Length: 242
Image (cartoon, rainbow, N blue to C red; front, side, top):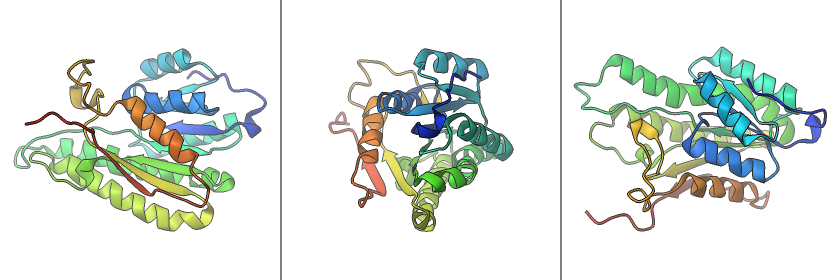
C-alpha cells in the first residue's frame, strides 16, 4: 500500500474510488485530486495500484481490494477514514463483463459479474455509510446504458447493471435523510480498457472519454446543495453511422 497521509487529515476532503487503476476510475481520481481531495484508489492487483498511486502523488493511497470480499472492503474503508479523518465521496466503479449467449454463459462467469458489479457495489456502499453520514457525503455509482437497454449476449452484464440502477435508486431514498446524495451515472460507449479493449486514440475518438466522466463527477459535486441530479445518462454526441 502507498500511503502518505498527514496530520491535517481531519480537515481534508477525501474520496474512495474502486476499480481505479486505469480508465474511468483513474480519471476520476485525477480530477478529484485537482479539486482538492485526498484519495484512496483500489484494484485487485496490488503492484499495479501501488504504482498508480505513486504516480498520482499528493498523498494518494493505493490499496489492493477485491470488492467481492465484504470484509476486505470494510477494512479498507475503515483505513481510509483513519488516514484522512473521514469520507466525503464514494465512487463505485469496479466492474467486470463476461458476454455470451445465455445458453453458453457459465455459472462462474455469471457469479463473477453479479458478485463484482452488484454485490460488490452493495458491500462498498454498506461499508461507507457511517463515515458518509457524518459529513453529508456523496455516492456515485458507475452504471451503464446497459442498465436499461438489453443486448444479445449481455445476460449477466445487463442483469448486474439493471440491478445496480435499482439499488442506486433505493439508496437515494434510504440515505437522503442521512444527508447522503446518490447519483447513478449511465454512460454509453466509453474509450476504456473494459472487457479486454485497448483504447485507440483515433478509432475511439468518437467515444466518451474517461476524462469527460471525471469532469461530470466534479461538476455534480459543485451543484447547489439543494439540487440532486439522481440519474445522468451520457452518450457520445456523434456516434459513427452504421
